[in-house]
Length: 343
Image 1 (tube, rainbow, N blue to C red):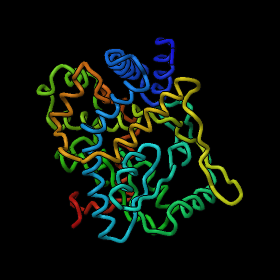
Image 2 (image 1 turned 90 degrees about the vertical axis):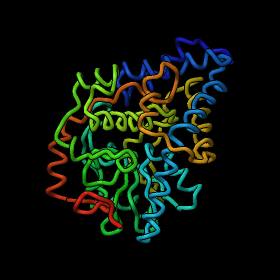
Image 3 (image 1 turned 60 degrees about the vertical axis):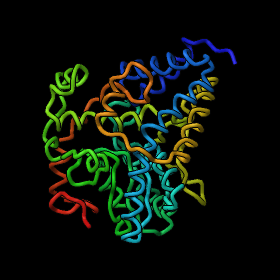
Image 4 (image 1 turned 120 degrees about the horizontal axis):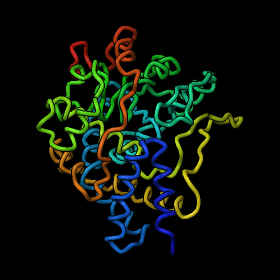
């Protein structure tokens, strides 16, 4: 299929810049299309192979280990994983493949009434909690749940506790910036989120990260690397649908208002890539799990690795939120009061 390179790249970049900054999206898409053009120029097949390799060697092994940990915790307490879409959709597919019987729910920031500092289309608003509660019951089918997400702060945890009541038994993230919520990357890469809870990553630290991580405090280096993994998973995967902004009561069912990301060839491309991504997650064998140094090397690579070069800006309300979280909520299972894993 013929296409105009500049127009297609521009459309894909426009999609990704809604959740990433424009500069980061431009860098990512440039790497992707350079790789496509070096491997046959067919954006469908070559792009699909690019993403397949990324899943096989990076995200798949990381998420497979996380999924096993989630499964263990859920089996221990008699709960099922509630994966928050879109970001935790890849985690959902691996959990389903290993027999964990996960649920998938579109409890996004917009659906829950929160704003987003990067995507300006998502603004704070009043929400219908009755519909939210009905949707929660519909999705969870009256099961106890562990909330599963890519990360990072836990800004929706209290909302989910409010609508789900005692059915919400805990929360587990791939990476957690919140010292009171479990993070799998925190666990395997020895990232202590208490040490970074009261700071904002600076532009200078990001510059040092690009040049040479050994110049940085090791906790900050790990923190930035894990942050990049999550930002890339959430915002640089080829999700063919936009993150929904509302739920609709259709009469006998509550459904998320899902819209396509783009149109024409750009939309077809993202749908094709996404099918490849899902298939790759399901077929990933999970070995070996990349070390933090391997991920850092990939991030600094000039080729396409599926990872963005820098983290998106930190949430301006981070410190205030985490301080209030400690006061109002405290540790969330499976974290104990000492900050370690229960059990």
